[in-house]
Length: 307
Length: 314
Image (cartoon, rainbow over all chains, first blue to last red; front, top):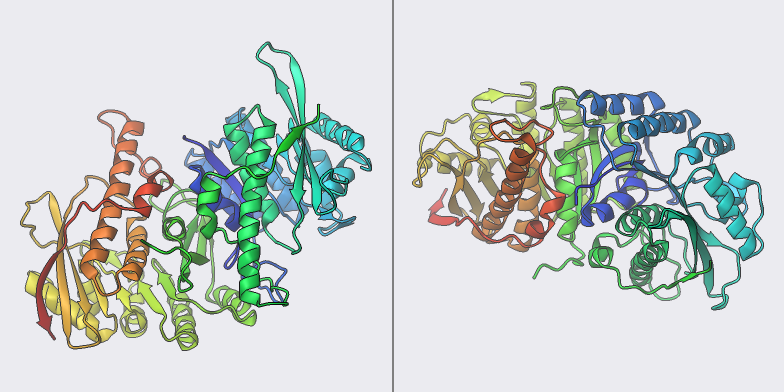
Protein backbone atom coordinates (compact mmCIF):
# COMPACT_ATOMS: atom_id res chain seq x y z
CA UNK A 1 0.00 0.00 0.00
CA UNK A 2 1.55 3.31 -1.04
CA UNK A 3 -0.44 5.90 0.83
CA UNK A 4 0.87 9.24 2.03
CA UNK A 5 -0.81 11.37 4.69
CA UNK A 6 0.02 14.98 5.57
CA UNK A 7 -0.99 15.50 9.19
CA UNK A 8 -0.92 19.05 10.58
CA UNK A 9 -1.43 18.83 14.34
CA UNK A 10 0.18 19.54 17.72
CA UNK A 11 3.26 17.78 19.01
CA UNK A 12 3.71 17.05 22.69
CA UNK A 13 7.01 15.84 24.10
CA UNK A 14 5.21 13.51 26.47
CA UNK A 15 1.90 11.79 25.85
CA UNK A 16 -0.57 11.21 23.06
CA UNK A 17 -2.46 14.09 21.51
CA UNK A 18 -2.38 15.60 18.03
CA UNK A 19 0.38 14.18 15.87
CA UNK A 20 1.64 11.99 18.71
CA UNK A 21 -1.82 10.38 18.79
CA UNK A 22 -2.23 10.07 15.02
CA UNK A 23 1.19 9.14 13.63
CA UNK A 24 2.09 5.85 15.31
CA UNK A 25 -1.26 4.14 14.64
CA UNK A 26 -1.26 5.25 11.00
CA UNK A 27 2.35 4.13 10.54
CA UNK A 28 1.61 0.79 12.17
CA UNK A 29 -1.15 0.38 9.57
CA UNK A 30 1.33 1.03 6.77
CA UNK A 31 0.62 4.68 5.96
CA UNK A 32 3.48 7.07 5.23
CA UNK A 33 2.88 9.98 7.57
CA UNK A 34 4.40 13.38 6.88
CA UNK A 35 3.77 15.55 9.92
CA UNK A 36 3.83 19.29 10.40
CA UNK A 37 3.81 20.10 14.11
CA UNK A 38 1.60 23.14 14.70
CA UNK A 39 2.96 23.49 18.24
CA UNK A 40 5.55 21.78 20.40
CA UNK A 41 4.45 21.58 24.04
CA UNK A 42 5.87 19.59 26.93
CA UNK A 43 2.49 17.81 27.35
CA UNK A 44 -1.21 18.44 26.79
CA UNK A 45 -2.98 21.31 28.52
CA UNK A 46 -4.94 19.09 30.92
CA UNK A 47 -1.87 18.65 33.13
CA UNK A 48 -1.20 21.11 36.01
CA UNK A 49 1.51 22.72 33.91
CA UNK A 50 2.41 22.96 30.27
CA UNK A 51 5.08 24.87 28.37
CA UNK A 52 6.21 25.23 24.79
CA UNK A 53 6.13 27.03 21.48
CA UNK A 54 3.62 27.56 18.67
CA UNK A 55 4.13 27.60 14.92
CA UNK A 56 2.95 30.74 13.14
CA UNK A 57 1.01 30.74 9.87
CA UNK A 58 4.16 32.06 8.15
CA UNK A 59 6.31 29.28 9.54
CA UNK A 60 3.74 26.74 8.40
CA UNK A 61 3.92 28.26 4.94
CA UNK A 62 7.73 28.07 4.96
CA UNK A 63 7.64 24.35 5.76
CA UNK A 64 5.13 23.73 3.00
CA UNK A 65 7.30 25.72 0.60
CA UNK A 66 10.20 23.36 1.34
CA UNK A 67 8.06 20.37 0.44
CA UNK A 68 6.83 22.09 -2.71
CA UNK A 69 10.28 23.22 -3.89
CA UNK A 70 11.38 19.58 -3.83
CA UNK A 71 8.30 18.63 -5.86
CA UNK A 72 7.15 16.13 -3.23
CA UNK A 73 3.84 17.80 -2.41
CA UNK A 74 1.78 14.82 -3.50
CA UNK A 75 -0.50 13.49 -0.81
CA UNK A 76 -3.39 11.06 -0.71
CA UNK A 77 -4.76 12.39 2.58
CA UNK A 78 -4.59 15.51 4.72
CA UNK A 79 -5.51 15.26 8.42
CA UNK A 80 -6.10 18.18 10.76
CA UNK A 81 -7.46 18.63 14.27
CA UNK A 82 -7.23 21.08 17.16
CA UNK A 83 -6.20 24.64 16.18
CA UNK A 84 -6.50 27.92 18.08
CA UNK A 85 -5.44 30.41 15.45
CA UNK A 86 -7.53 31.71 12.52
CA UNK A 87 -4.60 32.75 10.34
CA UNK A 88 -3.03 29.32 10.87
CA UNK A 89 -6.30 27.65 9.93
CA UNK A 90 -6.62 29.82 6.82
CA UNK A 91 -3.11 28.86 5.76
CA UNK A 92 -4.09 25.20 6.21
CA UNK A 93 -7.05 25.79 3.87
CA UNK A 94 -4.75 27.34 1.24
CA UNK A 95 -2.43 24.36 1.49
CA UNK A 96 -5.28 21.85 1.22
CA UNK A 97 -6.64 23.64 -1.85
CA UNK A 98 -3.23 23.58 -3.53
CA UNK A 99 -2.69 19.92 -2.64
CA UNK A 100 -6.11 19.10 -4.10
CA UNK A 101 -5.09 20.78 -7.35
CA UNK A 102 -1.93 18.61 -7.35
CA UNK A 103 -4.01 15.51 -6.60
CA UNK A 104 -7.76 15.82 -7.24
CA UNK A 105 -8.35 12.49 -5.47
CA UNK A 106 -6.93 13.79 -2.21
CA UNK A 107 -9.15 13.11 0.80
CA UNK A 108 -9.18 15.77 3.53
CA UNK A 109 -10.09 14.34 6.94
CA UNK A 110 -11.03 17.17 9.26
CA UNK A 111 -11.86 17.14 12.95
CA UNK A 112 -13.59 20.55 13.34
CA UNK A 113 -12.54 21.02 16.97
CA UNK A 114 -14.62 23.85 18.40
CA UNK A 115 -15.97 22.72 21.76
CA UNK A 116 -18.17 20.25 23.61
CA UNK A 117 -21.04 19.97 26.11
CA UNK A 118 -22.59 23.24 24.98
CA UNK A 119 -19.55 25.54 25.03
CA UNK A 120 -16.69 26.52 22.77
CA UNK A 121 -13.13 25.91 23.93
CA UNK A 122 -11.41 27.61 21.04
CA UNK A 123 -11.59 31.34 20.17
CA UNK A 124 -15.02 32.20 18.75
CA UNK A 125 -13.56 33.65 15.55
CA UNK A 126 -12.57 30.15 14.42
CA UNK A 127 -16.20 29.27 13.93
CA UNK A 128 -16.76 31.25 10.68
CA UNK A 129 -13.45 29.97 9.28
CA UNK A 130 -14.49 26.36 9.85
CA UNK A 131 -18.00 26.97 8.55
CA UNK A 132 -17.14 29.01 5.46
CA UNK A 133 -13.70 27.80 4.45
CA UNK A 134 -12.61 24.56 6.12
CA UNK A 135 -15.68 22.33 6.05
CA UNK A 136 -16.36 23.13 2.37
CA UNK A 137 -13.01 21.58 1.40
CA UNK A 138 -13.32 18.62 3.78
CA UNK A 139 -14.22 15.13 2.56
CA UNK A 140 -14.59 13.45 5.96
CA UNK A 141 -15.50 15.35 9.13
CA UNK A 142 -15.76 14.12 12.71
CA UNK A 143 -17.71 16.72 14.71
CA UNK A 144 -19.24 15.95 18.08
CA UNK A 145 -22.91 16.91 18.57
CA UNK A 146 -22.10 20.44 19.75
CA UNK A 147 -19.83 21.09 16.76
CA UNK A 148 -22.38 19.64 14.32
CA UNK A 149 -25.09 21.90 15.79
CA UNK A 150 -22.80 24.93 15.70
CA UNK A 151 -21.79 24.40 12.07
CA UNK A 152 -25.36 23.91 10.84
CA UNK A 153 -27.27 26.17 13.24
CA UNK A 154 -29.65 23.31 14.01
CA UNK A 155 -30.25 21.57 17.34
CA UNK A 156 -30.25 17.79 17.73
CA UNK A 157 -32.95 16.36 20.01
CA UNK A 158 -33.84 13.23 18.08
CA UNK A 159 -32.22 10.82 15.67
CA UNK A 160 -34.22 12.45 12.87
CA UNK A 161 -32.63 15.81 13.78
CA UNK A 162 -29.19 14.17 13.62
CA UNK A 163 -29.89 12.79 10.15
CA UNK A 164 -31.00 16.25 8.98
CA UNK A 165 -27.89 17.85 10.47
CA UNK A 166 -25.67 15.31 8.73
CA UNK A 167 -27.47 16.02 5.44
CA UNK A 168 -26.86 19.74 5.98
CA UNK A 169 -23.17 18.98 6.58
CA UNK A 170 -23.03 16.93 3.37
CA UNK A 171 -24.46 19.91 1.51
CA UNK A 172 -21.61 22.04 2.89
CA UNK A 173 -18.97 19.72 1.43
CA UNK A 174 -17.99 16.43 3.03
CA UNK A 175 -19.36 13.16 1.67
CA UNK A 176 -18.63 11.43 4.99
CA UNK A 177 -19.78 12.74 8.36
CA UNK A 178 -19.42 11.00 11.72
CA UNK A 179 -20.99 12.62 14.77
CA UNK A 180 -18.57 11.12 17.26
CA UNK A 181 -20.78 11.48 20.32
CA UNK A 182 -24.23 12.74 21.19
CA UNK A 183 -26.74 13.08 24.04
CA UNK A 184 -29.29 10.95 22.23
CA UNK A 185 -30.58 8.07 24.36
CA UNK A 186 -29.09 4.69 23.54
CA UNK A 187 -31.32 1.64 23.19
CA UNK A 188 -28.73 -0.18 25.33
CA UNK A 189 -29.30 2.10 28.34
CA UNK A 190 -27.56 5.01 30.03
CA UNK A 191 -24.15 3.36 30.17
CA UNK A 192 -23.93 3.96 26.42
CA UNK A 193 -23.78 7.01 24.19
CA UNK A 194 -24.90 7.24 20.59
CA UNK A 195 -22.67 8.06 17.62
CA UNK A 196 -23.97 8.46 14.10
CA UNK A 197 -22.45 8.35 10.65
CA UNK A 198 -23.57 9.28 7.18
CA UNK A 199 -21.90 8.71 3.84
CA UNK A 200 -22.87 9.85 0.37
CA UNK A 201 -22.01 7.06 -2.01
CA UNK A 202 -22.19 6.28 -5.70
CA UNK A 203 -23.58 2.81 -6.39
CA UNK A 204 -22.03 0.55 -9.09
CA UNK A 205 -24.90 1.48 -11.40
CA UNK A 206 -24.02 5.16 -11.05
CA UNK A 207 -26.97 6.12 -8.86
CA UNK A 208 -26.44 8.01 -5.59
CA UNK A 209 -27.29 6.77 -2.14
CA UNK A 210 -26.68 7.73 1.46
CA UNK A 211 -25.66 5.08 3.98
CA UNK A 212 -26.45 6.02 7.56
CA UNK A 213 -25.33 4.14 10.65
CA UNK A 214 -25.83 4.35 14.40
CA UNK A 215 -23.28 3.06 16.89
CA UNK A 216 -23.91 2.44 20.59
CA UNK A 217 -20.63 3.27 22.35
CA UNK A 218 -19.93 2.27 26.00
CA UNK A 219 -19.42 5.33 28.18
CA UNK A 220 -16.22 5.54 30.21
CA UNK A 221 -15.89 7.15 33.61
CA UNK A 222 -12.77 9.19 32.83
CA UNK A 223 -11.64 12.22 30.86
CA UNK A 224 -9.31 11.30 28.06
CA UNK A 225 -7.29 13.64 25.92
CA UNK A 226 -6.19 12.65 22.46
CA UNK A 227 -8.99 10.16 21.80
CA UNK A 228 -10.59 12.44 19.19
CA UNK A 229 -7.25 12.66 17.38
CA UNK A 230 -6.88 8.89 17.44
CA UNK A 231 -10.46 8.53 16.22
CA UNK A 232 -9.97 10.79 13.19
CA UNK A 233 -6.71 9.02 12.29
CA UNK A 234 -8.30 5.58 12.53
CA UNK A 235 -11.38 6.67 10.60
CA UNK A 236 -8.96 7.81 7.88
CA UNK A 237 -7.34 4.38 7.88
CA UNK A 238 -10.53 2.33 7.91
CA UNK A 239 -12.42 4.42 5.35
CA UNK A 240 -9.33 3.98 3.18
CA UNK A 241 -9.80 0.21 3.41
CA UNK A 242 -13.61 0.39 3.21
CA UNK A 243 -14.34 3.49 1.10
CA UNK A 244 -17.94 2.48 0.38
CA UNK A 245 -18.83 0.74 3.63
CA UNK A 246 -19.23 3.22 6.44
CA UNK A 247 -20.70 0.53 8.69
CA UNK A 248 -17.49 -1.53 8.52
CA UNK A 249 -15.19 1.50 8.76
CA UNK A 250 -17.03 2.68 11.89
CA UNK A 251 -17.04 -0.75 13.49
CA UNK A 252 -13.27 -0.99 13.11
CA UNK A 253 -12.67 2.56 14.25
CA UNK A 254 -14.91 2.44 17.31
CA UNK A 255 -13.52 -0.99 18.21
CA UNK A 256 -9.92 0.26 18.16
CA UNK A 257 -10.98 3.15 20.39
CA UNK A 258 -12.57 0.71 22.81
CA UNK A 259 -9.46 -1.49 23.10
CA UNK A 260 -7.10 1.44 23.59
CA UNK A 261 -9.38 3.09 26.14
CA UNK A 262 -9.95 -0.12 28.13
CA UNK A 263 -6.22 -0.79 28.29
CA UNK A 264 -5.60 2.79 29.32
CA UNK A 265 -8.24 2.80 32.06
CA UNK A 266 -7.00 -0.48 33.56
CA UNK A 267 -3.44 0.76 33.65
CA UNK A 268 -4.42 4.18 35.00
CA UNK A 269 -6.33 2.63 37.90
CA UNK A 270 -3.44 0.28 38.62
CA UNK A 271 -1.08 3.25 38.85
CA UNK A 272 -3.45 5.45 40.85
CA UNK A 273 -4.34 2.79 43.40
CA UNK A 274 -7.74 1.77 44.83
CA UNK A 275 -10.30 4.51 45.33
CA UNK A 276 -8.14 7.25 43.78
CA UNK A 277 -8.88 9.17 40.60
CA UNK A 278 -6.06 8.76 38.06
CA UNK A 279 -4.09 11.88 37.11
CA UNK A 280 -3.61 13.23 33.56
CA UNK A 281 -0.13 11.61 33.21
CA UNK A 282 -1.58 8.29 34.36
CA UNK A 283 -4.43 8.61 31.84
CA UNK A 284 -2.20 8.99 28.79
CA UNK A 285 -3.35 6.58 26.11
CA UNK A 286 -1.56 3.20 26.14
CA UNK A 287 -0.81 3.65 22.49
CA UNK A 288 2.39 1.67 22.07
CA UNK A 289 0.98 -1.17 24.15
CA UNK A 290 -2.10 -1.33 21.88
CA UNK A 291 -0.20 -2.04 18.68
CA UNK A 292 -1.85 -5.41 18.04
CA UNK A 293 -5.34 -3.95 18.52
CA UNK A 294 -4.49 -1.10 16.17
CA UNK A 295 -3.24 -3.50 13.50
CA UNK A 296 -6.21 -5.83 13.70
CA UNK A 297 -9.02 -4.65 15.94
CA UNK A 298 -11.42 -7.31 17.19
CA UNK A 299 -14.89 -5.93 16.47
CA UNK A 300 -16.61 -5.12 19.76
CA UNK A 301 -19.03 -2.41 18.65
CA UNK A 302 -21.65 -3.09 16.03
CA UNK A 303 -22.98 -0.37 13.79
CA UNK A 304 -26.67 -0.52 12.85
CA UNK A 305 -27.62 0.67 9.40
CA UNK A 306 -30.49 3.10 9.97
CA UNK A 307 -31.42 3.99 6.39
CA UNK B 1 10.66 -12.63 23.96
CA UNK B 2 10.77 -8.90 24.31
CA UNK B 3 8.31 -7.64 26.92
CA UNK B 4 6.61 -4.51 25.64
CA UNK B 5 5.02 -3.57 28.92
CA UNK B 6 8.15 -3.44 31.03
CA UNK B 7 8.10 -0.38 33.27
CA UNK B 8 11.70 0.50 32.49
CA UNK B 9 11.23 1.58 28.90
CA UNK B 10 10.76 5.34 28.70
CA UNK B 11 13.13 7.11 26.32
CA UNK B 12 13.72 10.85 25.98
CA UNK B 13 14.94 11.47 22.44
CA UNK B 14 16.23 14.94 21.57
CA UNK B 15 16.73 15.08 17.79
CA UNK B 16 15.59 16.79 14.58
CA UNK B 17 12.11 16.50 13.15
CA UNK B 18 11.51 16.51 9.42
CA UNK B 19 8.04 16.81 7.95
CA UNK B 20 8.89 14.32 5.23
CA UNK B 21 11.32 11.45 5.52
CA UNK B 22 13.33 9.62 8.13
CA UNK B 23 16.12 11.34 10.01
CA UNK B 24 16.53 12.26 13.67
CA UNK B 25 13.37 11.69 15.68
CA UNK B 26 11.47 10.54 12.59
CA UNK B 27 14.07 7.79 12.20
CA UNK B 28 14.27 6.81 15.86
CA UNK B 29 10.71 7.07 17.17
CA UNK B 30 8.64 4.62 15.13
CA UNK B 31 11.08 1.69 15.45
CA UNK B 32 11.40 2.21 19.21
CA UNK B 33 7.61 2.47 19.61
CA UNK B 34 7.13 -0.65 17.52
CA UNK B 35 9.46 -2.43 19.96
CA UNK B 36 7.33 -1.30 22.90
CA UNK B 37 9.30 1.68 24.18
CA UNK B 38 7.52 4.84 25.33
CA UNK B 39 9.25 7.62 23.39
CA UNK B 40 9.09 11.21 24.59
CA UNK B 41 10.55 13.37 21.86
CA UNK B 42 11.91 16.90 21.90
CA UNK B 43 12.32 18.16 18.33
CA UNK B 44 15.52 20.22 18.11
CA UNK B 45 14.47 21.53 14.69
CA UNK B 46 11.47 21.22 12.38
CA UNK B 47 12.53 21.13 8.73
CA UNK B 48 10.56 20.23 5.63
CA UNK B 49 13.05 17.40 4.89
CA UNK B 50 16.70 16.53 5.42
CA UNK B 51 19.43 18.75 4.05
CA UNK B 52 20.49 16.32 1.33
CA UNK B 53 17.55 17.35 -0.86
CA UNK B 54 17.89 20.17 -3.39
CA UNK B 55 15.93 22.43 -1.02
CA UNK B 56 15.07 22.50 2.65
CA UNK B 57 13.27 24.99 4.89
CA UNK B 58 12.26 25.22 8.52
CA UNK B 59 12.90 26.42 12.03
CA UNK B 60 15.36 25.57 14.84
CA UNK B 61 14.78 25.29 18.57
CA UNK B 62 16.99 27.51 20.72
CA UNK B 63 18.70 26.38 23.92
CA UNK B 64 16.22 28.53 25.88
CA UNK B 65 13.23 26.93 24.18
CA UNK B 66 14.69 23.50 24.94
CA UNK B 67 14.93 24.51 28.59
CA UNK B 68 11.33 25.71 28.59
CA UNK B 69 10.10 22.34 27.29
CA UNK B 70 12.12 20.48 29.89
CA UNK B 71 10.75 22.80 32.58
CA UNK B 72 7.23 21.77 31.60
CA UNK B 73 8.09 18.11 32.03
CA UNK B 74 9.79 18.83 35.37
CA UNK B 75 6.94 20.95 36.77
CA UNK B 76 4.62 18.00 36.22
CA UNK B 77 7.12 15.74 38.02
CA UNK B 78 7.35 13.42 35.05
CA UNK B 79 11.07 13.93 34.43
CA UNK B 80 11.87 10.24 34.90
CA UNK B 81 13.50 8.44 32.04
CA UNK B 82 15.26 5.12 31.56
CA UNK B 83 17.10 6.21 28.42
CA UNK B 84 18.17 9.37 26.69
CA UNK B 85 19.03 9.41 23.00
CA UNK B 86 20.74 12.22 21.13
CA UNK B 87 22.24 12.63 17.67
CA UNK B 88 23.01 15.37 15.17
CA UNK B 89 23.40 18.83 16.69
CA UNK B 90 24.88 22.04 15.24
CA UNK B 91 24.75 24.38 18.18
CA UNK B 92 27.12 24.42 21.19
CA UNK B 93 24.71 26.17 23.56
CA UNK B 94 21.98 23.70 22.61
CA UNK B 95 24.36 20.80 23.25
CA UNK B 96 25.39 22.29 26.60
CA UNK B 97 21.75 22.61 27.63
CA UNK B 98 21.28 18.96 26.66
CA UNK B 99 24.20 18.10 28.98
CA UNK B 100 22.58 19.99 31.87
CA UNK B 101 19.30 18.17 31.30
CA UNK B 102 21.01 14.78 31.20
CA UNK B 103 22.89 15.49 34.42
CA UNK B 104 19.64 16.38 36.13
CA UNK B 105 17.85 13.31 34.76
CA UNK B 106 20.71 11.09 35.94
CA UNK B 107 20.31 12.54 39.44
CA UNK B 108 16.59 11.71 39.25
CA UNK B 109 17.38 8.19 37.98
CA UNK B 110 20.96 6.99 38.53
CA UNK B 111 20.27 3.92 36.36
CA UNK B 112 19.52 6.07 33.35
CA UNK B 113 21.38 5.04 30.18
CA UNK B 114 22.49 7.83 27.84
CA UNK B 115 22.89 6.64 24.24
CA UNK B 116 24.92 9.21 22.33
CA UNK B 117 25.75 9.44 18.65
CA UNK B 118 28.59 12.02 18.66
CA UNK B 119 27.86 13.30 15.16
CA UNK B 120 30.72 15.42 13.94
CA UNK B 121 31.79 14.25 10.50
CA UNK B 122 33.00 11.42 8.33
CA UNK B 123 35.65 10.46 5.75
CA UNK B 124 38.19 12.79 7.30
CA UNK B 125 36.11 15.98 7.41
CA UNK B 126 33.88 17.64 9.99
CA UNK B 127 30.39 18.56 8.92
CA UNK B 128 29.39 20.36 12.09
CA UNK B 129 30.97 23.56 13.48
CA UNK B 130 34.44 22.83 14.90
CA UNK B 131 33.58 24.25 18.30
CA UNK B 132 31.33 21.27 18.98
CA UNK B 133 34.35 18.97 19.38
CA UNK B 134 35.46 20.25 22.82
CA UNK B 135 31.85 20.14 24.04
CA UNK B 136 31.49 16.50 22.95
CA UNK B 137 34.93 15.53 24.26
CA UNK B 138 34.81 17.32 27.59
CA UNK B 139 31.13 17.36 28.52
CA UNK B 140 28.97 15.02 26.44
CA UNK B 141 31.02 11.84 26.09
CA UNK B 142 31.84 11.73 29.84
CA UNK B 143 28.10 11.40 30.49
CA UNK B 144 27.44 8.85 27.78
CA UNK B 145 26.88 5.18 28.57
CA UNK B 146 26.66 3.96 24.98
CA UNK B 147 28.54 5.75 22.20
CA UNK B 148 28.25 5.19 18.44
CA UNK B 149 31.05 7.11 16.73
CA UNK B 150 32.30 6.33 13.25
CA UNK B 151 36.07 5.97 12.84
CA UNK B 152 36.62 9.67 12.14
CA UNK B 153 34.64 10.74 15.20
CA UNK B 154 36.47 8.20 17.41
CA UNK B 155 39.79 9.58 16.15
CA UNK B 156 38.70 13.17 16.78
CA UNK B 157 37.53 12.45 20.31
CA UNK B 158 40.69 10.59 21.33
CA UNK B 159 43.27 12.43 19.22
CA UNK B 160 44.52 9.06 17.89
CA UNK B 161 44.54 7.67 14.39
CA UNK B 162 43.17 4.24 13.56
CA UNK B 163 45.25 2.33 11.02
CA UNK B 164 44.98 -1.20 12.40
CA UNK B 165 42.57 -3.24 14.45
CA UNK B 166 44.95 -2.80 17.43
CA UNK B 167 44.64 0.99 17.04
CA UNK B 168 40.86 0.61 17.01
CA UNK B 169 40.98 -1.42 20.24
CA UNK B 170 43.15 1.23 21.90
CA UNK B 171 40.83 4.02 20.75
CA UNK B 172 37.79 2.21 22.12
CA UNK B 173 39.60 1.66 25.43
CA UNK B 174 40.43 5.38 25.54
CA UNK B 175 36.74 6.13 24.94
CA UNK B 176 35.80 3.79 27.81
CA UNK B 177 38.15 5.79 30.05
CA UNK B 178 36.32 8.98 29.00
CA UNK B 179 32.97 7.59 30.10
CA UNK B 180 30.90 5.12 28.06
CA UNK B 181 30.94 1.46 28.99
CA UNK B 182 29.74 0.51 25.54
CA UNK B 183 31.34 1.81 22.36
CA UNK B 184 30.46 0.79 18.81
CA UNK B 185 32.64 1.98 15.95
CA UNK B 186 29.87 1.98 13.39
CA UNK B 187 32.18 1.96 10.37
CA UNK B 188 35.87 2.05 9.62
CA UNK B 189 38.41 1.93 6.79
CA UNK B 190 39.97 -1.23 8.15
CA UNK B 191 40.24 -3.98 5.54
CA UNK B 192 37.65 -6.73 5.84
CA UNK B 193 38.65 -10.39 5.57
CA UNK B 194 35.61 -10.81 3.31
CA UNK B 195 36.94 -8.43 0.71
CA UNK B 196 36.34 -4.87 -0.42
CA UNK B 197 32.55 -5.26 -0.69
CA UNK B 198 32.51 -5.21 3.12
CA UNK B 199 33.37 -2.67 5.79
CA UNK B 200 34.51 -3.44 9.34
CA UNK B 201 32.58 -2.34 12.42
CA UNK B 202 33.84 -2.96 15.95
CA UNK B 203 32.35 -2.94 19.38
CA UNK B 204 33.65 -2.90 22.93
CA UNK B 205 31.81 -3.35 26.18
CA UNK B 206 33.28 -3.09 29.69
CA UNK B 207 32.58 -6.21 31.71
CA UNK B 208 30.84 -5.57 35.04
CA UNK B 209 32.65 -2.31 35.79
CA UNK B 210 35.96 -4.16 35.78
CA UNK B 211 39.06 -3.39 33.77
CA UNK B 212 38.30 -6.01 31.16
CA UNK B 213 36.17 -5.57 28.09
CA UNK B 214 34.64 -7.76 25.42
CA UNK B 215 35.58 -6.80 21.90
CA UNK B 216 33.56 -7.79 18.86
CA UNK B 217 34.02 -7.39 15.13
CA UNK B 218 31.54 -7.42 12.25
CA UNK B 219 31.92 -7.45 8.48
CA UNK B 220 29.07 -5.42 7.02
CA UNK B 221 28.17 -5.44 3.30
CA UNK B 222 28.79 -2.04 1.72
CA UNK B 223 25.94 -0.40 -0.15
CA UNK B 224 26.28 1.67 -3.30
CA UNK B 225 24.14 4.58 -2.17
CA UNK B 226 24.18 7.52 0.21
CA UNK B 227 21.60 7.15 2.93
CA UNK B 228 20.54 9.74 5.44
CA UNK B 229 19.06 8.75 8.76
CA UNK B 230 20.71 5.35 8.98
CA UNK B 231 22.99 6.46 11.84
CA UNK B 232 19.92 7.65 13.76
CA UNK B 233 18.18 4.33 13.18
CA UNK B 234 21.33 2.51 14.26
CA UNK B 235 21.62 4.33 17.58
CA UNK B 236 17.92 3.80 18.31
CA UNK B 237 18.09 0.10 17.54
CA UNK B 238 21.30 -0.32 19.53
CA UNK B 239 19.41 1.24 22.45
CA UNK B 240 16.61 -1.30 22.00
CA UNK B 241 18.81 -4.37 21.59
CA UNK B 242 21.28 -3.53 24.36
CA UNK B 243 18.19 -3.09 26.57
CA UNK B 244 17.27 -6.66 25.73
CA UNK B 245 20.88 -7.93 25.82
CA UNK B 246 22.61 -5.65 28.36
CA UNK B 247 25.67 -7.85 28.83
CA UNK B 248 25.87 -9.39 25.38
CA UNK B 249 27.18 -6.89 22.90
CA UNK B 250 27.54 -9.60 20.26
CA UNK B 251 23.79 -10.35 20.33
CA UNK B 252 22.84 -6.69 20.54
CA UNK B 253 25.02 -5.76 17.57
CA UNK B 254 23.90 -8.71 15.45
CA UNK B 255 20.26 -7.66 15.88
CA UNK B 256 21.03 -3.98 15.30
CA UNK B 257 23.15 -4.49 12.20
CA UNK B 258 20.65 -7.04 10.85
CA UNK B 259 17.76 -4.56 11.17
CA UNK B 260 19.85 -2.00 9.34
CA UNK B 261 20.52 -4.51 6.59
CA UNK B 262 16.85 -5.33 6.05
CA UNK B 263 15.74 -1.69 6.03
CA UNK B 264 18.54 -0.65 3.69
CA UNK B 265 17.94 -3.50 1.25
CA UNK B 266 14.23 -2.76 1.09
CA UNK B 267 15.02 0.91 0.60
CA UNK B 268 17.55 0.36 -2.20
CA UNK B 269 15.25 -1.99 -4.08
CA UNK B 270 12.39 0.49 -3.90
CA UNK B 271 14.61 3.46 -4.78
CA UNK B 272 16.00 1.76 -7.86
CA UNK B 273 12.47 0.78 -8.90
CA UNK B 274 11.29 4.38 -8.55
CA UNK B 275 14.33 5.82 -10.34
CA UNK B 276 14.17 3.41 -13.28
CA UNK B 277 16.94 1.43 -14.99
CA UNK B 278 20.34 3.11 -15.22
CA UNK B 279 19.30 6.19 -13.20
CA UNK B 280 20.66 7.14 -9.79
CA UNK B 281 17.84 7.47 -7.21
CA UNK B 282 17.16 10.93 -5.77
CA UNK B 283 17.24 11.80 -2.04
CA UNK B 284 13.44 11.67 -1.97
CA UNK B 285 13.45 8.19 -3.49
CA UNK B 286 16.16 7.04 -1.05
CA UNK B 287 14.15 7.79 2.09
CA UNK B 288 14.26 4.75 4.37
CA UNK B 289 11.34 2.34 3.92
CA UNK B 290 10.69 2.51 7.62
CA UNK B 291 6.99 1.81 7.86
CA UNK B 292 7.28 -1.02 5.36
CA UNK B 293 10.03 -2.63 7.49
CA UNK B 294 7.92 -3.02 10.63
CA UNK B 295 8.19 -6.83 10.73
CA UNK B 296 11.98 -6.71 10.36
CA UNK B 297 12.19 -4.12 13.11
CA UNK B 298 10.07 -6.23 15.45
CA UNK B 299 11.93 -9.44 14.82
CA UNK B 300 15.07 -9.09 12.70
CA UNK B 301 16.36 -12.22 11.02
CA UNK B 302 20.07 -12.35 11.85
CA UNK B 303 22.11 -11.85 8.70
CA UNK B 304 25.43 -10.73 10.19
CA UNK B 305 27.61 -12.62 12.64
CA UNK B 306 29.65 -10.72 15.19
CA UNK B 307 32.91 -12.39 16.16
CA UNK B 308 34.02 -12.14 19.75
CA UNK B 309 37.67 -11.19 19.75
CA UNK B 310 40.07 -11.79 22.61
CA UNK B 311 39.05 -10.11 25.84
CA UNK B 312 41.51 -7.38 26.62
CA UNK B 313 42.54 -5.59 29.78
CA UNK B 314 42.95 -1.85 29.75
